[in-house]
Amino acid sequence: MAQAPAATLTQNVLREGLILSRTPDPAVMVIFGASGDLTARKLMPALYNLALNRYLPSGFSVIGVADTPLSEDDFRAHMADAVRKFSRTQPVDRAVWQSVAEGLSYVRMPFDDLDGYGRLAAELERMDRERGTNGNRVFYFATAPQFFPVIVERLGASGIARTGAGWKRVVIEKPFGHDLKTAKELNHTIHSVFAEPQVYRIDHYLGKETVQNVLVFRFANGIFEPIWNRRYVDHIQITVAEDIGIERRGKYYESSGALRDIFQNHLLQLLSIAAMEPPPNFDADTVRDEKVKVLKSIHPVDVDNDVVRGQYGPGWVGGQQVPGYRQEQNVSPNSMTETYVAVRLKIDNWRWADTPFYLRTGKRLPSRASEIAIQFKSAPHQPFAKTAIQGMTPNVLVMRIQPHEGASLKIAAKIPGPVMRLRTVNMDFFYGSSFLVESPDAYERLVLDCMLGDPTLFAREDEVERAWGLADTIEDGWAGQPAPDFPNYPAGSWGPEAADALIERDGRRWRRP
Ligand code: BG6
Figure (cartoon, helix red, strand yellow):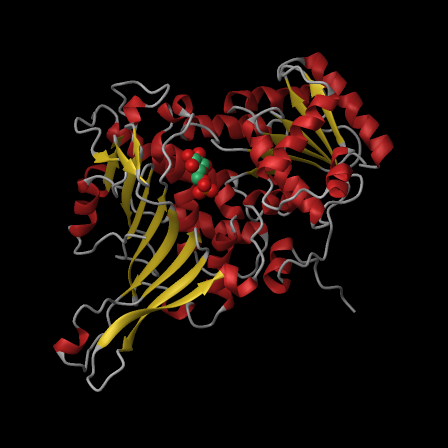
């Protein structure tokens, strides 16, 4: 009998919850930027939690690479601290941590030092010999983005990217380029050493449980997809709201802004997933083909009419007085960088023609809330008295990405009593109460997928370039047009008035999640 094709991890997770039918091959993960924040806050806690849940293969090893003077023991102690501080599960299980720590080593070198790559190669060979990792490698770029090209080039020149048996994969953090031109250059550099199927571009939003759940809601239920279109949907609002400011990242943020930091990646990823056509299967390229089709179908943006930018001034968030953006560390006192952006998009295809998508993101908004809200049209006819339906609102399906992960559907219900009066109520699904398990961190899922060779939840070359093309159109529209009203929203408010006007012109309102 013919064998069924091997299922991808995504298929298995969709079908079986978190039961893995495959474990990754033994491998070495080389983390460039091992003494940095990302490694401590995200990567090492993710690896520890994967080990705790027995998802890591025996022999799995990590080589930290950085130019910080650390002995191997220092590095292990630093990583142990990081796991104690940042792991989502506490307290740390000593035996599990011990098993992870045994596979840790450290190579100190500047990222452009060819001799250093010689030492790294020797260390990799030692791991293969002693830990049975068979030449399988994940090269994880957790450095500042200016080092990405030189690391790729040196991995190629030293032969590490190709030597020996086993697979080689490369994980690249965001920002992937600064605009379309630099993203293309970076893709070109990477492809001079690694083929596209070896490249895993991280957008951590894709690793979030609820983002994947949008796919499940849409494609595993029979009832949503038939109404998921222009005939029944009035519009869609996608929000990534943050109450935090820019923290200590002034230098990076000044050259980025909300458009590059969140719109180009997280918001457009959410849009693609909400708007894509049902893929015939969950193969990485089939899913990504559908997402790219959405990006290709976006109607050209009229920057003057469809986009609003904002910058926060001083204000109050969560009962605390906070400085304005221009008063933050490493920010110019005359900065023109946007900390808020709202965009109205249209998608030119049969499903979505004339259905607006309103996307917004901002720092120092009143609360942290990321969601996709599908606003349905009103019922075509109301047989109830006007007084009975006063204050009623049309149906809304909200996919809450964070916090309070889950979904809710607003529906009309009769208020108990002898009189016919209706009210909008919520049907709620909360991850926490339905599954009674804590969701894994996005990085756990993504690191594991990479080790399993499943790039479904990573951005492909054409996806990233399309998204930059769109962001560039907006940046170009802004260029040479300073924003004289900056700062134009106080910290702790829902953004600039112009953003309200953008949606209210269409007779709609922003949600206040
Ligand atoms: C990052 C951005 O990609 O996402 C940050 O660079 C932002 O500015 C963060 O704060 C938000 O991620 P999350 O998972 O906290 O919503």
